[in-house]
Image (cartoon, rainbow, N blue to C red; front, side, top):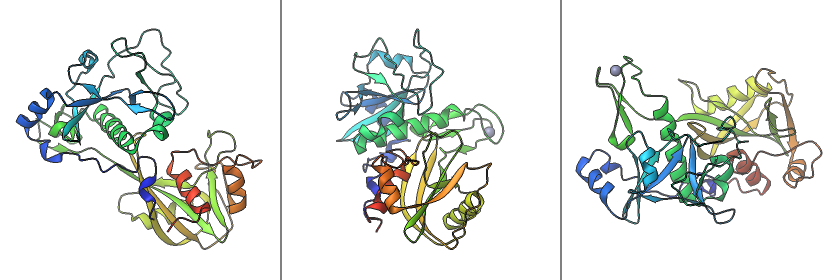
Length: 323
Ligand SMILES: [Zn+2]
């Protein structure tokens, strides 16, 4: 698909400077360099400034006082115009006087402002700001959020249970007891445009906003190909048999650690039998109906949210730009 990398989080060709990750002297020099900057994340929320249309991921100098809140060493994200870019996690900070029960969900509209930061700078839920970012800011924010989420639940060795240490500028953990090396995980998920003539198969999960329908999706299982996962998930969830499967586009989705693999599949059958444990409803939606839904004029259907790969695939199907 020619437009594949235009999806949100579709990448910005960031130089990840992987050759420096184990170069202790270079990393130490980089942390002292006046052009070095860092991205700051608090409980999965990136530090942003500006507003809609001019939203920026903040890059702070390494001597900024707010970084004293970090409890672990920074992670090397890469290099921009010759200068290193790190990420700091200051999740240990507790904002005063805020209800924190909404944190972590799409509905989290709260923003947190640290007293050491400028009034315009605040921590925002990534799903609410992702479509306002440049591709570079989106890539840096997604990488930082995903790797801090991995560290937050991998403090102990999965082989022997001992506390492990951060290594390779944040891109590994090493167990001092048994010597195991652990690498950040990304979990593959297939998400598919299942087509039958002029219609696409859409479903909805319990708990979604009323009327929202999207492409079916599911985790790839160990020992399974992408094609097999597409066919299995569609048959399990909707009872529809799928023949030919092709790849369209992929999207890192750091909520918390997925790689969405967008595919198209040709339906071999039309009858729908849903698995009510997995989904609440599934239906065939014609191009004309979907165009109405995107225009906000369909009486029953709201399309997948902007920023999600499902939205991107459906829009490109409508525009006939899947090739
Ligand atoms: Zn171990």
